[in-house]
Structure formats: structure tokens, C-alpha cells
Image (tube, rainbow, N blue to C red; front, side, top):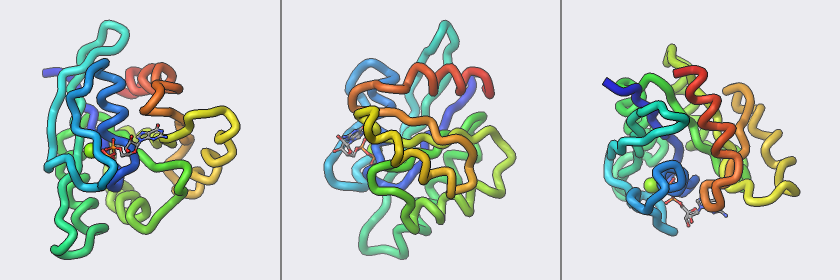
Length: 162
Ligand code: GDP
Ligand code: MG
């Protein structure tokens, strides 16, 4: 079977936007409001002649128990079935409590994890990327899911750890 790459992160950081960029089509649902992607959705993707499966995550209910716990639980299920994990953070917002909840869960995971600093649409936003080293998840990869900036370097790195 193709390697599985799971994309996790709190609602609204741009997971589905990044997936659509990688797929080259608008298939994953992008919404201005958080929480639109239901549970986990898989897509067939390809980079540099290598096939893999991309798993988008989301899905939580505002009224139920804490959002942090729900997002982390969704991420945990996706991660259990993955070979590589991409943790997406909104670099313009910086580190939130929900990001930290996901990171606590990921610390127990013995799989390659790459940290994505999304929404870096311009070079002058690069300083926002450096703050994400504080998550302790290694080097942040600056990308713009919206414009595609940085995704080639990210995908090269994904193939290397796959
Ligand atoms: P998800 O909940 O993590 O799947 O996030 P979405 O992909 O649905 O995106 C949430 C919002 O962030 C949408 O309004 C997107 O257009 C916006 N967004 C996603 N990626 C970028 C980016 O690279 N730059 C900017 N400026 N906005 C982005
Ligand atoms: Mg989504």
C-alpha cells in the first residue's frame, strides 16, 4: 500500500488548503469557519513520481467537551494510521493552547513528524516562522497553502522521511 501522510492541526490553520494545493484541485473543503472537515478524509496524491495517501483531519463540535481534547483525539486516530505526520500551525497567529495539546499527544508518537508554518504568503513574514521552534517539534517549514509557496521543499522533505 502507498505510504500514508496525515495532516493534523487545530481548526482553521489551513490543512485543507494545503491538501488542495498538493492535489492541484479543490477537493478538500476549505472554510473560513473552523470545523468544516468531517473526521478524516483520504486522498491519493503524488510527488516526484512517488504515490502516497494524504489524510485530512477535522471535525469537532463546539458544544461538546473541550475543543483541544477533541482536536487532539482526532489527530491521534489519524496519526495511528500514518507513516508520516504533518503538524500544521498558523504562523501568523503563533502557538495556541490547542497547538500545544496536539504537540503533547504527538510526543508519544514514534514516527517522522514535520512542522509546517502555514500562511507565510510573503518573505517579510519569515520572522513569524522562527517563533514556532518553541513547540519543540524541530525545524518549521514555511509554506503558503494559499499560494503554494514552500510546498515543493516541504514535499521533498516528506519523501526523504517516508
Ligand atoms: P483547516 O480548518 O485547517 O482545514 O483550514 P482551511 O484550509 O479550511 O483554511 C482556513 C482559512 O485559512 C481559510 O479562510 C483559508 O483560505 C485560509 N488559509 C489557508 N491557508 C492559507 C495561507 O497560506 N495563507 C493565507 N493568507 N490564508 C490561508
Ligand atoms: Mg479542513
